[in-house]
Length: 114
Length: 113
Image (cartoon, rainbow over all chains, first blue to last red; front, side):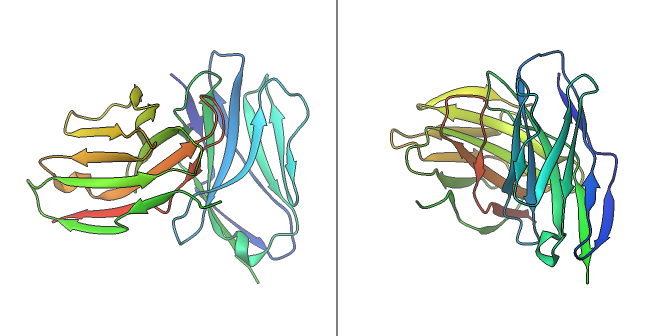
């Protein structure tokens, strides 16, 4: 069974600074997808970024980028130029290549301070 | 394009009752998945439907059931409610048949008294 581990329960960062959230996962499969989702206080789950395991290039979406290390089974999220609106719970998630069951980590609460 | 919608947004029930939650996916999406979110257990997969067929089921008791209609709308039902069923129930839809990003609705907050 796949597992996803987020070792940082809470983090804080000053506005405009950069922060990195960690995620490791365990799987025996070679092809899969990894995601970061954001859940602000409204509880709406928002997709931040996606990475296909067969792609070596790290995904980037504006201020959000990932560091995907397949051999180490590590998938960290870097947020540059942090904004107050980035304050949320961030979930790392795994999905098999053939399947629609997301496996989530426990989440990291990120607080952006002004 | 409208996002995933869930109704109702909030629900209060008492132990022993049953409840039905509804989810309308993004237009064109045929896969609908349900998740339960609680402070203690985090986000857990309940089940997934694709083209009116349940394809995957999580480790939940039989009191939790669901179905999908021909227009891809989905419902989940919880019978004989227990206090521990209090949670945020999230529905997600996906365009691709499998293994791709899912888009979530706003959730239904169920409180069991």
